[in-house]
Image (cartoon, rainbow, N blue to C red):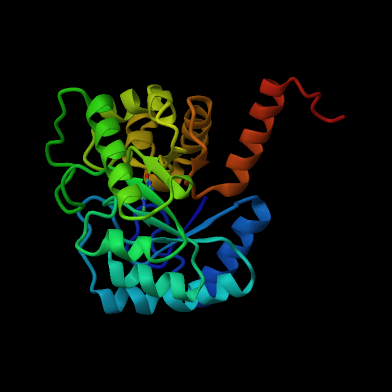
Length: 262
Ligand code: 9MG
């Protein structure tokens, strides 16, 4: 899954794809580099980010989604707002990526009335304050239980089980220690039977481990994506699609015993 932020203040790309033409070109690049899904977001969820209105978010993402869908790309809408979900699906998106796991009022119904896939992500707190003092007794069990609970709610609302993915939400109300514990235990999430999505690309934990600023975290992010897949992730949400795909191809060739270069 390639990240396409249509925001002036996103964490990792400095808002470089805010312009329509740049956004389209970047999505085409990620597709050519091997992305299967383009995740389009119009509201930053980075720590400390300010909320934007429904209207602003719709105005940012809908023209881009229409253009990507017209080119038959598989588009995911990164939003917490039911109205944005509906507008995005009408514009051609086929997946809802919700960092609030469809907890907003009306979100479950909005997702259920479409035939799209959903990704239910865990977040402790709210983007503005979530990194202040994240706290868990048993981070893996609590988040696994939360996600299974949300998935069952989604099924109860009419979303088919095979349309649901879960995501522990790396960096969303989690310290480096929490993130690493979750990464090591990703198999526990995969064992629920729901496909697991993991997003560590360019996040603070990568910066803490490598001591690199956000613009210099590609190698660390690729390593994290590999670790996530090795521990059971089915989808990785990344900025650096080409590098991640290459690394995964090599890793898979080793795992499957293929002869590289033949
Ligand atoms: C929108 N967004 C930012 N980080 C994310 C992550 O780790 N997972 C998902 N599903 N969405 C994310």
